[in-house]
Length: 290
Image (cartoon, rainbow, N blue to C red; front, side):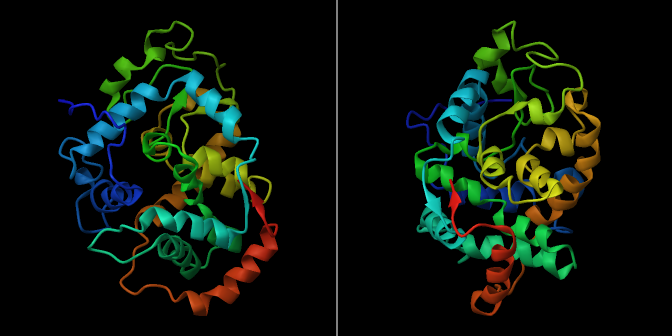
């Protein structure tokens, strides 16, 4: 599979919204619009920039890089915000939005959570749908897109060939390091995903931001919704413990809402706000540390 020219600015996509449009329209199209075999078509992506995105991601997401980012961000000292302030903050990412849609980030979050609510799920599940992408504020803290979005994977052990564009891992320093390029790497058989260091991005970050406020199934949804090699390809089971296998049910239950929640009529925020005010007050503090 051929690669694209390296982008010297390390910005394979002009805007985070470009990635989201590609994900929604090409990798995970609306149900019944494509056959299953056509989903996540990386051989013929809609944008050449997708390969460049994953080239940068797979080269740079090393064990040492992830540990550095954990040390930088997980003390959660960047900013304290209410949920509404966080959404407003995140909306600055889409000020130059795609001409084919006028959905801002609030509308995307609402469409996900409202789809979950329409199906009668628990209120914490609805809340998880609303929160799941807020970790993308990492872009506004200066992180490049390859360290914010995209499919996630464990670092510190051999890369699975079921991760998208696995050929790009050949240029990742860990693939040549005997500490990290074996089946288990720095881990033990069945150690549990809680003891695994995942590639750095919005999933892992938001898990630590919200873990004290959400029930365990919601924590798994937030933390692993982009870990497709696990929840779709059944890879990395040798690192899982029994609890991970039980919680996989919830990650898979969340996945369709993450991918297929677009509806023709935008949710009316003025009508919905009283419900979400109560929902946030039930589970979340007035301000959250990011």
